[in-house]
Length: 253
Ligand code: SAM
Image (cartoon, rainbow, N blue to C red; front, side):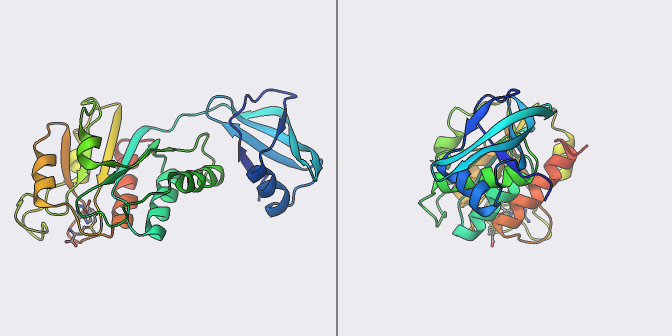
């Protein structure tokens, strides 16, 4: 692996000596087996990515010395992902893939049909950090505390359109848009979006309730979209929709 990357929240400047915390020392020293003198890269969103080397590896811990700037920081697009937590493995996948796909904030929302009521934010944060290191980002997305859908929408900043993946389509009574009642194709909707910031909402395994759908569709900053003629698993929907968003609006261009 090209010199491994480590997200370090402290100030990065030439000659800085940084003591790794226990988890970082375990990752660098035990998992990656780096020794004194070995090279690595340290980075964060404020100071960019720097060449560094292990300056000490003892039983008491590890230190790295920052050497030279490699890359200036580059911000991920201002894109939030709101998703209803699903089974643990699928939730982990959503967080890991949303990190690779450049999401800035990941916001778990508890909907009426959400099964996973508890969300281990600290656990999801470490998945996001690890994925940020692998995917060559300069920051790890923030994992927010779970909120009910209603609370998440309450006082919403209308300058951030909310792209709502509406599998149920235009007929509020139908469980699913099928061949006729689907919402607007996501790509068509995105081509009309001129906002500098955006959010995407993906529902739980059981989808949104008719009341939730009526509430969502009543909000002017909510844009209901279809992800095509098949029902996607929540994790597939999140990954697919984020890909289209980054390609049509975000930083894939
Ligand atoms: N209501 C679905 C059903 O009838 O089985 C289950 C919901 S689906 C597994 C999980 C979430 O993914 C949905 O709430 C929606 O946000 C998104 N989704 C899945 N397929 C979609 C589609 N074809 N169009 C829009 N959103 C979709």
